[in-house]
Image (cartoon, rainbow, N blue to C red; front, side, top):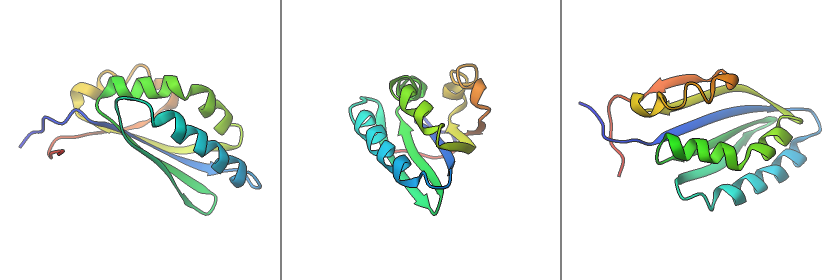
Amino acid sequence: MSTHDRCCSIAPYFKIAEGQIDRFKQLCEQFVARSSVEPKCLYYGFSFNGSEAHCREGYEDAEGLLAHLNNVGDLLQRALEMAEIVRLEIHGPEEELQKLYQPLAQYNPQYFVLEHGFRR
């Protein structure tokens, strides 16, 4: 079985510094507002477990993911002043992941190749 799904998702997990959770959550509101107008963003949101946060986000394709990172780059830099990324996963079909390896190399993500499935 193969897939024709070009969707790429990125899953950053943040460890928020002590005393910074409220500031981080306020910044999340800005991330969501900016992301909501991106034409290739399929879903976007933050979930929390104590001082850990996860951003759940998906894009139509690699270009949508890269456009998002460009759109929120300044917010990401602010987030990294109060939190660190402890895990970063990128999921998508190999053809789309090929477009992400070089631009995302500085983040040292773990890549997961989509091989089977569908998207409605």
